[in-house]
Image (tube, helix red, strand yellow):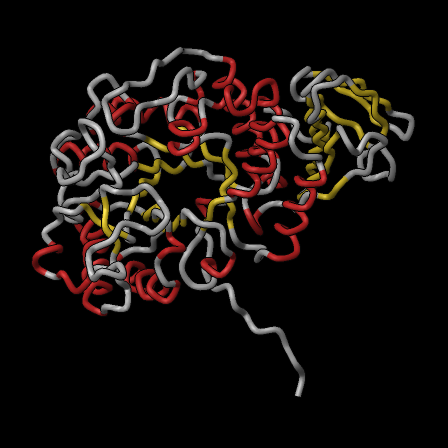
Amino acid sequence: MPFNPQPQYLVDQPKWSRNAVIYQVNTRQFSTEGTFKGVTKGLSHISDLGAKIVWLMPIHPIGKKHRKGELGSPYSVKDFRAINPEFGDEHSLKALIDQAHALDLKVILDWVPNHSAWDNDLVTTHPHWYARDYKGDFRPSPWWDWSDIIEFDYNEPGLREYMIEAMCYWISEFDVDGFRCDVAGYVPNDFWQQAKTALDNVKPVFMLAEWENRDLHEQAFNMTYAWSWNEAMHEIAQGRASLDRLRKYYSWNERAWPRRAYRMTFVSNHDKNAWDGTQREQFGDCLEAAIVLSVTGEGMPLIHNGQEAGESKRLAFFERDPIEWQADHPIGELYKLLIRLKERIPALWNGEYGARMIQVPNSQPEQVFSFIRELQAAKVFVVLNLSSAPVKVNFSESLYQDEYIDVFASQCVKLTDSFTLCLGPWQYRVYLSANFPLF
């Protein structure tokens, strides 16, 4: 009897997601209005940027008991089937989703399955659905300072049924396209499998887990967070890690993760912005190189609202603090160019739709990260100086040798075995096969 491999990772990636980019919206801060209507006005901007998925941070009413700050955390949910009046009503949310769909955008809602606000009605109607501490009291998530929430107990079948029915409600009534699931690893994987089956029976959904675990891709999630990619890049930018940290990530990505799984590569998000600093605070002069790698390397890139306008401040998490929008910011122009490449070049597509990264050995491996992605006669050669010192580098093996368009210089070049490249600190090059028109 042959010992044939058994399929284990069964989540199919929708064709529309093959070259998608995801964009995070903090409704409270996205516009001066801080409402769904304000987001709706900005959807054409998101579409023009090249994003395909709009992730709305939690839209539900926020608990008042033990609330943090004046307005509270959107992750302290008072009612899973209601809308935060701060943002609008059912009509304005439906108008947002309808307009997004008209622009060929998908909308996923932030879902908070692990816990609720202290004053959620479930506390009184179903107190047995909640976890308890050693004293028998309701508890926040242990070891965190999440004092404004209390945890659920997913050993309770009734809780599972309630959560799945609530998620189905937003699909059937509002036509949402999926969910970003907060701290998904704090909830048992078998629940996610149950949920995905039920949700897909209403409408095929796209599922993003705020977690980094390949097993979540078995039967439930399309995409998980690449936290370790972000951590590696951040430590390299701060001079606290060598490039081998990044090479280990990509080795792990290739050998230990399913080919069809999407991993979300990000420079910023609401947590990073609020608690660790703006993109420039975190990455310094490495920022642009990190963005280039997040889009051209394997993974689906995330844009946190305001990044494309320079992300000039840390957005307050518990108060109104609208984004300071700057039109035609260099970071936005960089994202637009890279996303246009990603949309058009099959090698840069997501998961099994795209090409594997193949390391191109170079003479300065402690400073320079270089790779090829090639598919359907289109080759992309990426070289990044991930150091604060200038470097002169040459490359071995023949894979990179070809005729290219230097994407940022918009000129044709021929790279041979004698090719030598001089790069300034944190400088990068992206080359595209000359036989493939740039735009």
